[in-house]
Image (tube, rainbow, N blue to C red; front, side, top):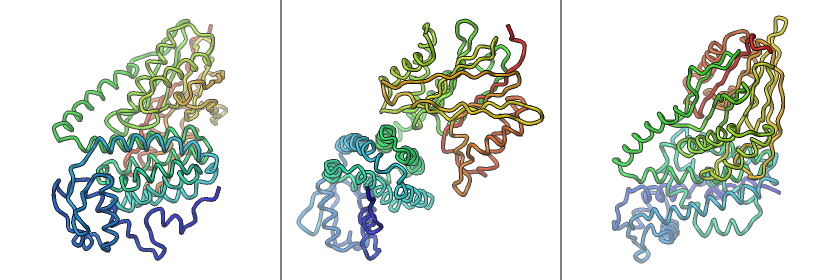
Length: 481
């Protein structure tokens, strides 16, 4: 599959072969029409619009013809137009179609884009630069180009025709101003899409694309609410934050012969990271940590569903962890809002034998650090299965790990390793491993503090982009049979 060359990519974002950017004037016009600069029933003179937006008369006429198709204006001959009231319902329906269309395109494009995402990476880098500069017009043009590359790679002409029929390029340009406060989050939601496509994971890419579109649509919907509603939502979010805190285990929970410390900090009011400690039959303990794809309310809803599903399954007798995880996965799959999914590490620990049985469903591998002869040996509890909630029929393999006294287990979410500095570099797993080797004899509380301090120094004031969760357990003696 050959991706578009530079000339073709320019045409995708409205750039003419001579390097001019006529689409940017149209982008600004669409955005200002949709965001309320022009009032319903206001008359617009095409000649004045052309001068203000640095467009020629013919370009304005073509743009207004498209706007009329979307119901944004009514043309009055070739010289003027009347602004129509916005139609949120019609826009919502178009974005519902777009969400399904992009999911199909992502699944189909994965084979062609596996190991071949240079174009997507380039567009995402340009989006980040434009978002950093506050250039909405440039950001949306590169966003459009990003999605066109995926559509083209899908080799599905029907999808492209539907995209064009719904004038989705124009709709994206029109609403960009509505999401300006959430622009960086929207831009960053493209990264996991690139990662999934680079690995050829079509199902995952499709779900991520659908989630991206639905999140985009949700931001638009929120901005259309009046200030009183927004205040009510803000109050609800504060209450939701308190409710979410109740989902986590109490701070004074004690596991026999284990010293434990946790840390959780959401990127927004509420988040999608999850951890739990469960007292099970036979003196065993359940240890869970997960990360929902997405942020905000939708992610928190799936996090709550995941926790409820897992706790319900641990109450029932089960043959092995594989069966338990298959049941949890099926429940999450059936109840997932907006087709979200979650990585999950779940383990059952027996203090008397110090045996840990675990399943890692697509989660960052927890690290076990073992003090040994003046140094620290390290083990990585790697993922063996896909995240939960993607497929109802997924299978999960369990593994056993034998702890020794003084071993330290460090489980975390990717908000730790993906913390960025001012140059856009990630802190990364290697820095985490190096740090843990230097402090493996310290207490869990000290280890968490060391990690926080190192990330804070590395980030140098950069805004936290993702939820951050740490779960650190140190194995103590005294529980031998």
